[in-house]
Length: 153
Image 1 (tube, one colour):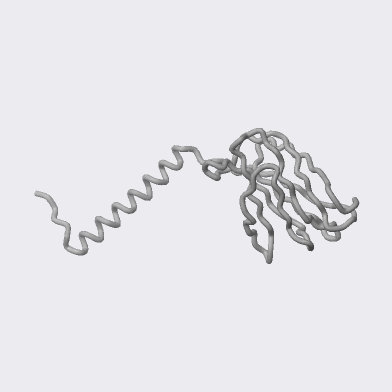
Image 2 (spheres, one colour):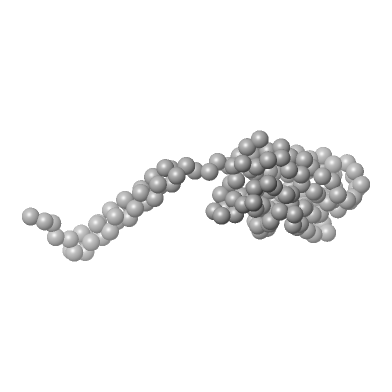
């Protein structure tokens, strides 16, 4: 591979999270151009792996680019989100990602596709009602211990 642009075609098959990881001695990624998607609500979140932890580099619209810097990176994560609620986008068609590399060399990398399911509304309702119930109990206990509670006849 010669330093410069390489296109990667992805067919997500219900995936919305991508982890790109190079093996040692591969040329590092200098920049990425985010693809065009047919869903108008799509937005991309990019993360970089630094000192053993993932860090968000921000949210990006279609056809924008991000420069990792002159030293490049050897791994990053890309998430496809719905910009209205920033939850994982469930319906993503095939797309192409453009990567630019710092130097020439043989590329050896792994691209892992995963799916991060969106919680069902009933699950969120159950969570909110459980938190509300716990709050009500704490208010009841604190008022009772403070002497503000008078039981009815």
